[in-house]
Length: 151
Image (cartoon, rainbow, N blue to C red; front, side, top):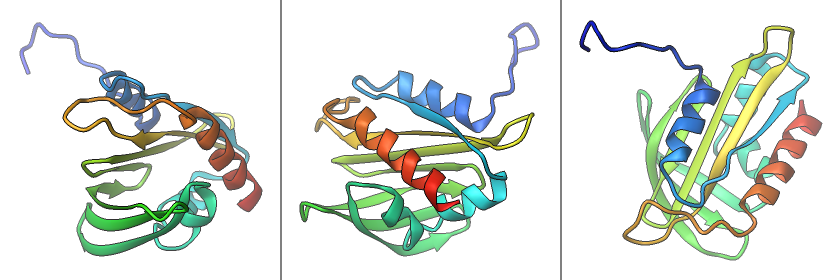
């Protein structure tokens, strides 16, 4: 980086907002969950277990390969559609995408207690950096409510 350029540190939630801003139709939904970061993230990062219970649209997600932070998984929606996802999962951060689907989650501890969680995702428009915006925010709000109930 050039010495004359400003530098800024972004927490995971702010970083998710930045990435989503580059995707037409993406909506980021946030909520502060009244639970410690570790308890919240263990549920969100349990891709083959709790994640499917939290995400209203997800019937199942099966991890096929995990090498460090890199993950390959197969998701199946409640409507039976399947997607092979590739991406990164690390503490406080999950970004998984396929040709047709995007899942983005971020979490960071709140200074006064609790955990700020943000979600984005949806069905991708083939050949474009865009998501179909129908129902995305409603699904994320339902997922965050389910997460709050589980912790």
